[in-house]
Image (cartoon, rainbow, N blue to C red; front, side, top):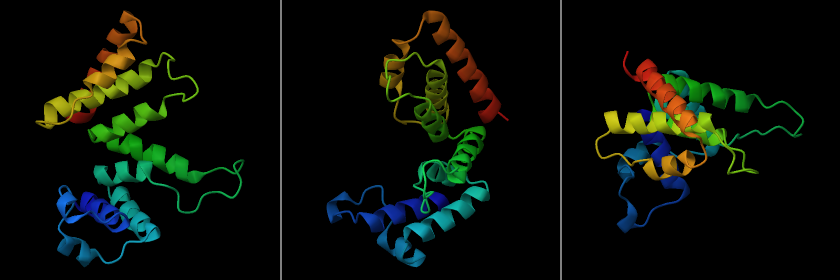
Length: 173
């Protein structure tokens, strides 16, 4: 909850909602208590929450923009390694967002029709978590159907079996 509050207050400061569009945002008074959140301040606080093991913070950090990108594209970027680590940690805590992010990272934007059984597995794992843990959560069924069309039946079965294993490993401890 703390990581989510921090993230939503940061978004509220970056793009202040109109009075009619405040649904989903924390009350302004709660955000005022956090003070002004610059990107560096947000990263510092969210990283501390992620390092403390909060899955929501780990997911937020997994998609956060690097405030200090490398000067050269050839230079190694430890930020990317940190993000992958956070995705894995959040996935091991049964956070569906981690599986969705990991699935998206598996895609090749140059070849969107490429068969991608691993991405389907992660999307299906997220769908299982949403169904089992969050009543009324959005369904990934439309996305899953698009991905199913790219796979052979045996790949779908293997992916769905692996998703069940992922779910039980991360979510039923």
